[in-house]
Image 1: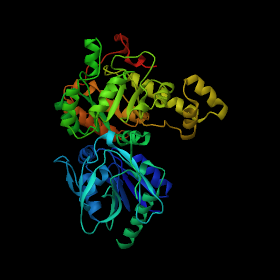
Image 2 (image 1 turned 90 degrees about the horizontal axis):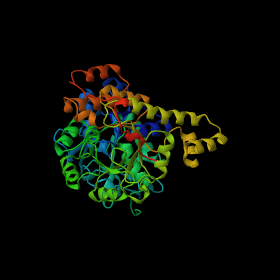
Image 3 (image 1 turned 120 degrees about the vertical axis):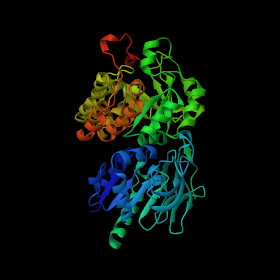
Image 4 (image 1 turned 180 degrees about the vertical axis):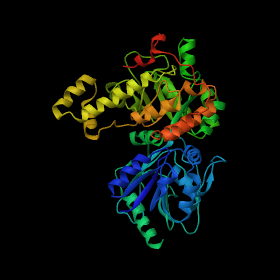
Length: 196
Length: 295
């Protein structure tokens, strides 16, 4: 079974761990560089991207994590995790870390403050039946590179995207009982392992 | 085809609490302090007029902060902003929701407005966090719609002993309920003065239905790690940061300690050279226990 790391510096990492374990993955909580050894996939959870940026630097994890991502590891970022993976960040802080793993431009907190946070049903490409999505102070995807596929949209904006080895979501598939989006990521991990 | 969106639902409120896990929520009284907190890696700030240590010192009635001050803090940072309303003061909560704060703390640190009733939190789109000293109190707050529970501790003392007592009480009873049989759960509900369905849910899942954070008296990186090792999912630090000698350094150290709570080598490293923590006071030296407020 695939060995998947979940970045566990801050945020909703426990919910991702629970979901991946239930799908049979061998899951490692990543807090230090040694936790990256032998990973076949990596999840960057939701939380506060500024907090995670700080902790990536202080824990010495930033450079090894960047190297792991650059080496072709399959990665999935949700909300703050999507911000960390995107090539361009709008309304972020100047010192915010970007791993530039997917050619996308995202805007922090674009869907508003917490009172504007919402849940809704999405149609996700290749999934039968709607996927219930929870958006929390969500970032918006404002531009995509040509190699990036849109798997789901909300109000005309992409909210779930995929490139050859990276998935990113504005919403939180880890917060509902539906595991299908995580299953899609594990499929991506398998296909990436085949080409690596 | 997409369905119409739903705002202010319980999963959406609880969702923000999930995002704050593993983080540190810091009390701030000015936009400048809020910036320091954000730079240090706070996952949210609590905007208030006086930190609990000063409320304790000054006495008098403590109320919701001036909206102007809350707006100043909202403008200064991009992380979530929380603010406190008095227990039972649903109008203060309405005002805070109208200001667009991200979380309302119905807090015993402010002077209670109602000695029998807490706010009906289901009437709001903004999520609420409430304090609790024991499991019964936590479940009563959840029944009223709280999306996060924080163990109360004793705010403004810099003394972690009450935080430990309350966390142990809540988590100890959760563990005991996990070993109870179905008939005993009725008795637990009666003893805790809590709704039976919530007690039954805990027996099934082994945890509270909402995130459990720790507050009240944390002053050092070691205090934060202690709360986390005992089972808290994140921490609130109030007076402990800006009443210390080196707030920016201490704030950053507490953030790191909360993430690496089970790694003594990192805790030793981040605990060094922080200058003096807030002085702190013993429980026998205080005449008002905030933790006793709440029903």
